[in-house]
Image 1 (cartoon, one colour):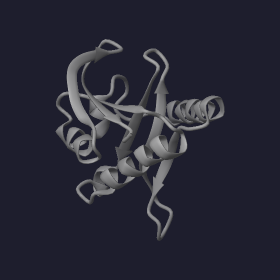
Image 2 (spheres, helix red, strand yellow):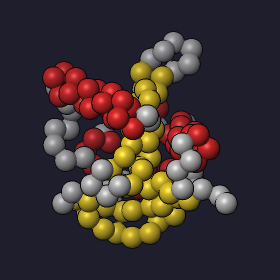
Image 3 (cartoon, one colour):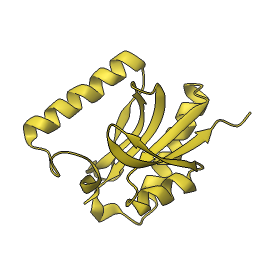
Length: 139
């Protein structure tokens, strides 16, 4: 369901998913940070992804999270988002982290607010209307 807010195929094929994973691993190799798999601690079930990624076109670090619908409403995206911000601020020494979200994705906007990001503007990224949130490391 959450993929409806992303341009392109609503459910990636195996080949597309493989290319996405290759890009994620390349990002880690190039920048030293990226996205992590979200798993259920007890059984290792993959339920989503979370982390930080560089938006190279704007030179911004973005917090990113996608969670399987079956796990919505449990605070998991909020917990993982907070951990991602802490990693960015405390380990990577990033001063500013953005959240970019589709205007209709109210649940993700609430998560961004809960983890401490503030709405800044409605704008366009890559030809898509978005809501831009910003968080800053405490002095």
